Length: 184
Image (cartoon, rainbow, N blue to C red):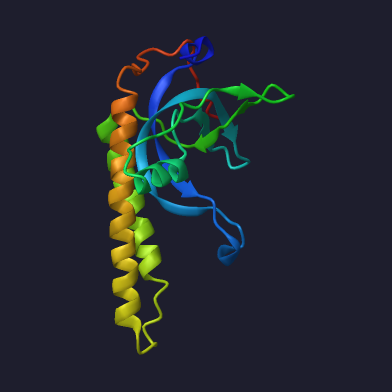
């Protein structure tokens, strides 16, 4: 593990598992599900709105996020996550590959609870895409449900492998600084 990673606080967050989409989806990333994972917190920022409310935004780097590599390795009969992400910096000294998350968690169970809620919401959104006016709506519904269940079980396996691979990364108890949110 590189020494730069040791300098960042470690917390849990919810990772939106995505894979690159092809021409059928306009080359947009396709969401596969949501998992709980440890992450390196590289930036925390408080954004104040004109209504006086504030929002904490965290920029994090997940140690493993390449779901496509994982899925490809499974097709060969191997459970492999690939290499751990290292934190790199661009010309403006911005860390990458990073994700924006609104919530950080102290325990796996807290993050898993949020991931489960996100997965339920995602499932409902998928099912709502079924046109019930079509004569084949039951077939479409079953097809979506089976696909979601299969993908969900693969995401759970991905999550378990990440958790076992990162078990030695200790969750940071005290951060080096603190954030005081100013109230008007």
